[in-house]
Length: 271
Ligand SMILES: C[S@@+](CC[C@H](N)C(=O)[O-])C[C@H]1O[C@@H](n2cnc3c(N)ncnc32)[C@H](O)[C@@H]1O
Image: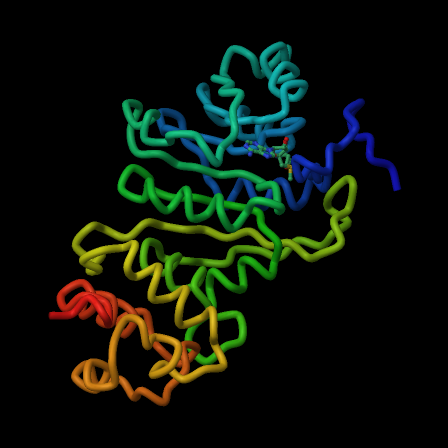
């Protein structure tokens, strides 16, 4: 299978799978619905599969691209260069809040799959500066983002994503829509950050730590997996059965455990 598309050889280390199916590209751009005057930011523009049709609809677009050759291609692109602000850097380290002068951020991209989960967590930290995000991801990751209690895909990523955002799967995309074709199915997801008054955790890092502990040993009962954070009496006070497993707890229940730990301290640190 050819790794060269539009004269560029795909770099595996940068997770490069370039979209080439016009129908899929059209569907994604329609889902994003870009409008002039919006603060639009694309992560990983690559060879411009989404960048070009978006720029047909707007005058300004900021792109964040790590690959030096691709960033250079975009800077000297005959039709795009006047519309683009090219930021050549690692999106994982980029301070997206630095772009908020032009209004709340609308972020989109066909993301490099090798860093998609940590990149999601990085982006959640800018939730209060973002109005929405549209991402192409591995379908399995979209399933995890959207999963609810009782499902196999439900885990820390589901709880943390749904804590910060409303999660809406938009469309499924087969491997053949990309060059080179990835080995897995893909999907596009829309994430809309929730207003601050709906973010009820006293300490988000504790919520994350409680989820890590609970899902890190997901076959164990909460009594065991959360033994370092909350005792049985604490769980009972919250009306949570200590013999439940992480996969059966709702987001609200995870928040109540994290807030209980924030108030009482983890086990061992309690007075
Ligand atoms: C899956 S490709 C998508 C390219 C293009 N948007 C498309 O749909 O055809 C991922 C893109 O992200 C870029 N990339 C990889 N790691 C990155 C990072 N850490 N920060 C910013 N861009 C990155 C790659 O160079 C590549 O252009």
